[in-house]
Amino acid sequence: MNIFKNKGKNKYGFTIIELIVVIAIIAVLAAIVITNVNDISRKDRNVKRLADIKAYAIAFAMAFEKNGEYPKPVIPSCLGNYKNDTCWGGRVSEFESFNTILAEFIPSLPASEDPVMANGLNYNGYVCQYISRLKALTLTWLMEGESQSCGTGKVSSPNYYGATVCIYSF
Image 1 (cartoon, one colour):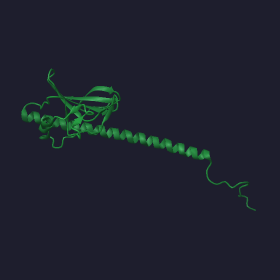
Image 2 (tube, rainbow, N blue to C red; image 1 turned 120 degrees about the vertical axis):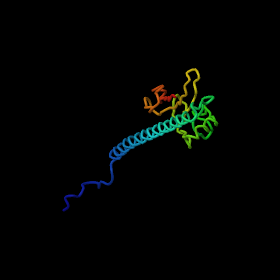
Image 3 (tube, rainbow, N blue to C red; image 1 turned 30 degrees about the vertical axis):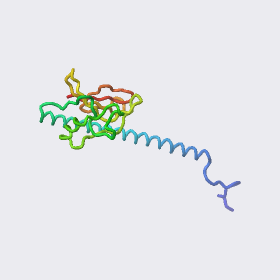
């Protein structure tokens, strides 16, 4: 006599409820992992942007030391070399001679091809402009996420449609 034998049907496998519970747990864990990976990637891109701006600030300081003045773009210009010679979603163009001046002090001009979505538009890269009425040279860029640190730059708009607008002035 076997006392451990199931009475009635033999039970094989899992019930539908057990399977649904396991799938739900896996889905929740996957959502947590994906959110963390996306957040880490955003932070990495923002750290790269700050490093690029620091490199440009050093290049501008070296140009000032050599020439006694900062190089000034004639029109707002992209800093760096971009695939289509434009940045900020094609709204700003590169100014070749301006980038050539900077290339003397920073051999490979960093360019951010990673776009930041704000107001339904893509903003990639760094824009330099000279504002003559203020006699100020500015670098402008966007950071992914609201209220982000701009490093040594100044926060111009902490919540620009989900992004942070940063300005570095000379």
